[in-house]
Amino acid sequence: MSNADSVRGTLPFHLAGAFAPVREERTDLDLDVIGEIPPDLCGTYVRNGPNPRTGRSPAWFAGEGMLHGVRLEGGRARWYRNRWIAGDFAPNTHVVRHAGRILALVETWLPVEVTAELETVGPYTFGGALGSSMTAHPKICPRTGELLFFSQRPSRPHLTYYRADASGRVVHRAAIDVPAVTFMHDFAITERYVVFYVLPVLLGDVGSPVPIRWVDDFPARIGVFPRDGGNEDMRWFDVAPCTISHTVNAFEEGDTVVLDVVRAPRIMMPHALHRLTFDLRTGRAAEVELDPRFLDFPRVHPAVVGARHRHVYTVELCDFGPDGGFSRTVARQHDLETGAAVVHDFGDGVMPGECVVAARPGSAAEDDAWVILFVHRRDGSAAELVLLDARRFASPPVARVRLPCHVPLGLHGEWLPDGVAALA
Ligand SMILES: [Fe+2]
Image 1 (cartoon, rainbow, N blue to C red):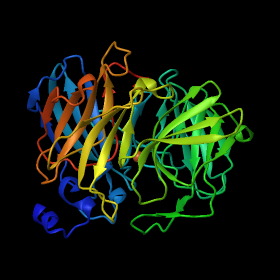
Image 2: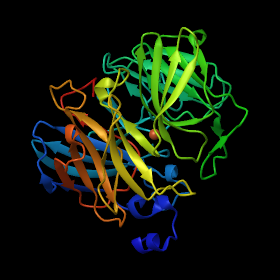
Image 3: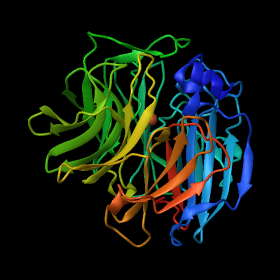
C-alpha cells in the first residue's frame, strides 16, 4: 500500500493515510526533541492499536495489535520501539500496568503480558482467576491501588465482575445476571460502586466489518453495583436508548452517582459528551448533554478516577464519513467547572490521538500535569510524541519528540511513570 492509494481513495479509511499500518518492527535510540522534556518526567508512554500484519483488515478494530512506546528519562527521549503483540489473538485496544505487570488488552480475549521493552511474555490469567476475556478498559482505583474489571461470555452468566487488590490478586468476583452479551466496551467506578452499561447493542455477525447490531426492543439499563456486591445488590436504572463508547469518569455526590460518558443515540452515529446521574434513593436517572461535538477518547487525570473530576481531555473527530471513519482530529480540554473548552488544533494534515494525562511528580493538582499524545500525519510521514502543559493546553507544546517513522492513528495508551508500582 502506498500513499498514492490513499490519495486515490482506493482503500478504506482505516488502512490509509494517518491510519495506514506499518510493516516492520524497529528500535530507535536517542530521538530528536524540539523544546524541552521536563527532567522529572521519567517513564514510558505506550499506546496500542490495530496493525494488520498483512496490511489488510476488514475494519479498524480487526487487525493484530501493535504497541508503540517512547521512553522519556532525564530530559531525553531514550528510545522508540514498536512491537506486534505475539500470539494467535494479539490484543489491539489498550495497555495498562498493574502490580508491576504491563498488560495488552482487547475485550474478546485474555490480557497478554508484555515487558517494559514491549516484548510479549504471554497470556495472563491472574493466577487462573480469569478464564476468558477481559474488558479492554479496566479501572485502577487511585485510592486503593485495586484493578477493577469485567468479563463477558456467550454462556450464562454473561457478565462477571472482578476486583484485584494492589498486588494483583483477585479478591472478589461476582456473576451478574444480564439478559444477553451486549456491546459493553467500557464501565466506570466510584469510591463505593462499579457501573455497568447494558444497552441495546448486541453482538452481530463476527465476519461483518462492524460486528454489532442495534436492537430496538432491548431495554437500555445502567447498573450501579457495590464494589463488594453480589448479584442481588445490583440497582438497575432505565435510561434513554443509546450506545456508550467510552467512560469519562464517575463519582459519588451523596446518594447520587454521577457518570460522564461519550454516548450516541444509536450505533454508527456521532458521539457527544453526556452526564448521567443515578439517584440511589429514588431509583431515578437523569441525563444532560455537556458538549454536543462529535468527540471520543475521553481521559482524566489518573488520580481522579472514581472521584470528582474537573478537567476532561477528548479528541474531536471531524469529517465523519458514512463508513464510520474520520479524516481530521483536534484535541480538546474541557473544564467542567467553568464550561470552557480549549482546543489544541495541530493544523491541516496533522491528527492528534488520545490525550493521556501524566501527573507532575509530587503534585496533587488535577491540572498540574502534562498531556502526552501521538500526533499523526495524513500523508503517512513520521509522527511525533507531543507533551502539552495542562495549564496552557492551547499553547505550543512543551516538547515534541520526533519519531523515526509513521505511527498509525490507533486506540488507547498509558503513561507508565517510573518509581510507581501499584498506583501507576
Ligand atoms: Fe476503547
